[in-house]
Amino acid sequence: MRTAQELLNLLHLERIDDRTFTGINYMTPWGIIFGGQVLGQALHAAYQTVVKDRFAHSMHAYFILPGDIHEPVRHEVDTIRDGGSFTTRRVVAFQKDRAIFNMSASFQKRQEGIDHQISIPNVLPPEVLLPDYEQVKHLKESDPQLYRRLTISHPNAIEFRPVENLFSAEEQHCQANRHVWMKSREKLEVGLAVQHQLLAYASDYNLLTTALIPHMKKLRRSNSFLASLDHALWFHRDFRMDDWLLFATESPSASGSRGLSRGSLFNRKGQLLASVAQEGLIREIR
View 1 (cartoon, one colour):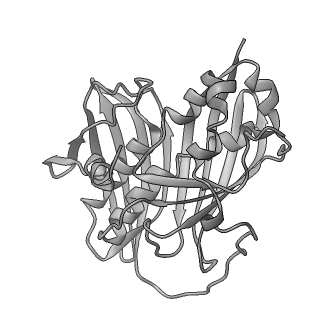
View 2 (spheres, helix red, strand yellow):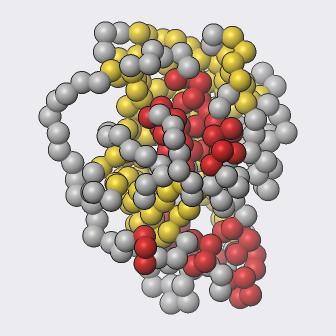
């Protein structure tokens, strides 16, 4: 994914009929569809069935089966409800007539109300930080297998600048929390609906891995298998993906071969823009 336009093309679906859409796949090196792709595409499909004055405020999804990058994905939208203020949609993604993913999303027209939020963490700004792929360059010689695993899925259309270098030589960071600045590498002249779809895509990066941080030394001595099980995203305030956003994540629990991570997204002004939660499968391959 070299450019922002390629990412936009990935998320934009072809309309088959009023409730059915299909799109291209990001050809991941590991041969399975990236979860952020179906999150963004499913939200795109839902948006195509909603009146223009309503915007997503939440989406809740389950990853049912691994998606094959060589097979087209068909998104079918169930227009559950159109109310006075809220609109509800359900999207199911199919491959070979098998459901691989489903999502429920709720949309709301603009309304005023009470307003409060948590504070942005006090961390280093993105200007003094190296991109993530620069922070792990030293692993290219010392641990080439880990280096490949960390860089093979890098989305070049989006830049990530972690505050904490989890793979520094000292390896002192062991708390299950992390802070990563991110933004698109290019200007994006798109509306809020597409900004939502882009964030749905990007929110699948750097989230589940937060649950690995307390176990990094152990898992580095072996291989680990990770897979997203579900994903929830709440949109609080308007934003642009071509501005720096701080993704502050934490993992309150890991047990039963599952890890839970949650995150908050802030802009440079300290406004809380979105909240995310995800549970994923984490298995150690002995």
